[in-house]
Image (cartoon, rainbow, N blue to C red; front, side, top):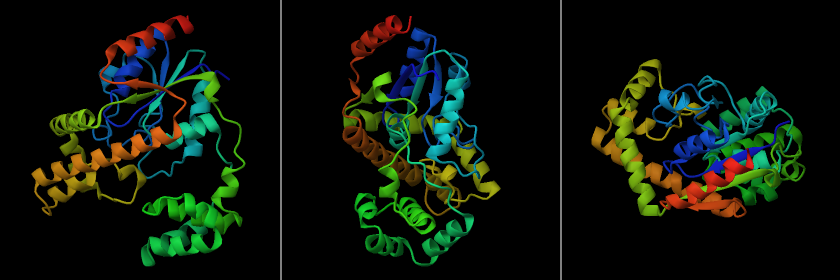
Length: 306
């Protein structure tokens, strides 16, 4: 399998796509998506998927290839990446902001047995009737090792941990301690993290959201609303979607919706930065807006992949 990979991670609005295109031109490479929201067909504008002009500059894979109602996991993403890599000898530029995808790619992913639909349905019922506190209590009692590592404010992760324990009799910590071999070991890749000063990144986020509103985000939200917006679908977690739809429903003003959406995106970027600092210490850091460092990297990669 082709393992000549270039990994580019960074928070939302950090300029990853632009940099990836520069790299693709330098090494004659392909671009593979590592963003958990950009895999879905819906929300092309709000998730900042590549434009048609960008798509013409280099081959892009795993963007918008999943229907919004389809369940999609990091394990399925790894399988999709493997399928792309098997079909090309060109350098692969894997780009995104989903830290969990990169962790699975470079460290390996625990091969957890499939969760039966009956267990998932019970989990959904407990979540609706009991809330996250019930999952916390169950995990704290029966799987304390996993519970100690989970974000207790993330209902989806808590439910997932309970489902794994219920279905397999073993907690996520057990499965994570026995991962499969990584698809792209870090030692076989050039790995970069793009960093911006917080205030500069937040300004970029705000400007980009304003551009999204001008370039179709409102129409996307209107279409989703008319089709019956389901906020609990993973595909519908596009930042700003709930707020704009709330404005369309008359619950808040559109101005307040935009302000709230920008704040939520700032908070999301902060969580991404925290992950990258914690989990990607060994990756090469690109501190923006120092363009000269990008130039040096592009020149080095062009020689490396000649």
